[in-house]
Picture 1 (cartoon, rainbow, N blue to C red):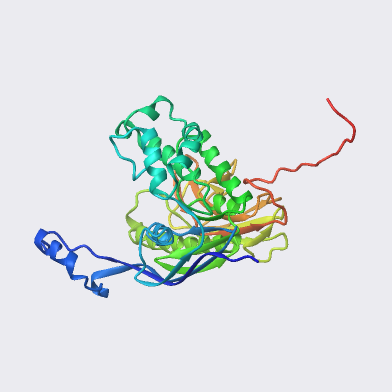
Picture 2 (cartoon, one colour):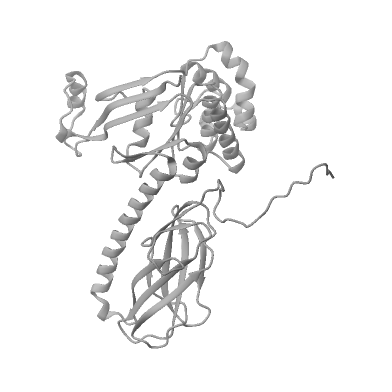
Length: 408
């Protein structure tokens, strides 16, 4: 029977707010260490607030959220680095935390000596460390630096060695905090392969990352943390969709506010001005929609008006993935507007051949010389869904053929 490897109930973690300069002396700080006074709400902020989380043995959970949302604090609570101020934390099994890699390395000890010390701090016996030493050194791949003091290492080398030590502990539970981009591309690939092997062996993984592709690739479930509060928990695609929609709405609000400010003094601008009034997304039938099946027709209707006489206009669009990757962009080959005070521009994508994910349709209006007049970015979200397990960005049309008994 599957049992929980990690169980958090009502976990809250507070941190004391630092006083301003000149308001605290060394003497007062020393005295405060012995007072053990409870944190008052006015003196602290809640990095985590009433968090519940259950991770079953052998499952992988991705934690997403903006910077400062409490993701790393949550990992440190699970890893017993922080003690919660309220709630309970239960962890079953040997745990390895890939958090602040190399932070425990002594600068005057060699890489090899730090491996032994770090392994013992993580609960391995000296014999276990010696048995795995060559494998750890080979995986880190830092060359002759392994015999040099850690103070001579670059930050990348420290992280490579730290990852290698933690990844060779044979843990039951692996906590990972933004370390999938450690080192160069080849080493990052090794990290990914190591994590994949943990999953195949039925290990429990909690992953903190800003990379939605990593969550979809390695996680069975996802949690969205927002300012210490759990906003969503469930299948990765559903949680990522909710998270990205919230970000899109926030960016749209900021863009609208900036647009209002920029248009407040529009009469004083020396250049012709065109305003994009709105964008209407629809399918082949013209009905409004923001959810498309992969391969369907996407039709975008852009409404504009000229606030001043303008030269011939060129309109363009870009389809941008939620992480900022520009999937495709195009402009009109010839100016499409020559003096009309208002109107619409329609562009049709015959086949939206994208893999499942959240995208945005960004639009812009330009003069003949390329001068941008107005643009809408991150305001028009569209969701693409597919029944296939394709990865990447674009769906490339292909077919498979089996030829039995053939060989080259």
